[in-house]
Amino acid sequence: MRKIISLIIRIIISAVILFLIFKQVDLGKIIQIVYRINKSYLFFVFLLTLLIYFIGFLRWKMLLIGLGLSLDSFLIFKAFCIGYFSNLFFPSTIGGDFIRSVDLSLRTQKPRLVVASVILDRLSGYSALVIIATLALVLGYRLITDIVVFFVLGIILVLLLGILAILFNNFLFFRAVKLLRYFGKAGEILSKLHYEIYNFRNQKKIIIKNIIYSLVIQLIIPFLTYLISLALGTRINPVYFFILTPIIGVISALRISVAGLGLRVASTMYFFTRVGVSGEVALAIALLSFFINFLLAVIGGSIYVLTFSYRRLQCN
Image (cartoon, rainbow, N blue to C red; front, side, top):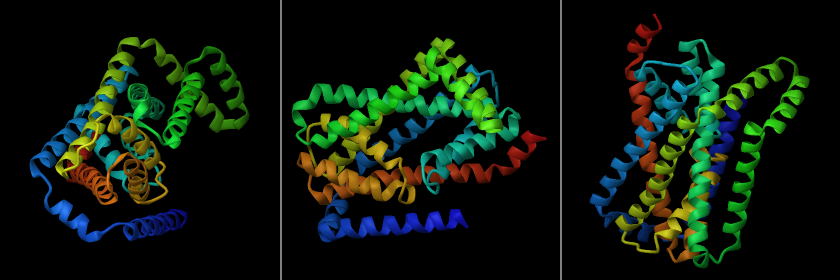
């Protein structure tokens, strides 16, 4: 019942946000903009999105191997697909991570290692996102006049440093372990999970390679947004996309609306209209970005469902 209520609330929030946004723009102009879209750019965007999907799968597979889980690549890919698909319906990206963790844990009987790999995978992507956004802001800070951008990026950076300190600092690690013991069985499970993540710091080659994969992904994503703007006939300094897209991605991940759509649209319009993009084009950029990710998630979910018999044979 709580899940149903949560979904209803997110649908209402999405509807309210989108209603308020659509009241501020000219729907006729949006239709004209989309009608004149350059389909060649859009096709290239879809291909690059597929590339991101594949690199993300390889990144997670690398972490699983580093933690000692040598699994069939097809099984890992299926779990990755259902996790990506589930992100459309859960209140945060953590929901999709939970689903892929459960799916793979049922096949390995080693849930602690699987969950550790998912946490490290998410941390790798988040670290690269912050690195790209920070470097872009350092290079293009003169272009940004809105103090909110600096404030949000500052919060994201501090949050990352705090997470890294707790997970990999020797002093803080043992303090955290001592604190977790007060939570009984749950604390014991978290303590063991923390231990797996902490010990992973010795896998330096995998960590470096993983960060490189993540940096490639986080470089492609703003470039995709830039290509979408070109497809819509809008040309602004590309640096804006490398500063603003990561921030929009973090805000959208909060998922208080369905699949983060409401927040994605609102934050895209807020930031891009302040750097010279019209409200109609900013809205079209947000909707097209969401649609391409939605299409890829549906394809992934379909792959998972259509290979059900294969998964059953693997389990037996």
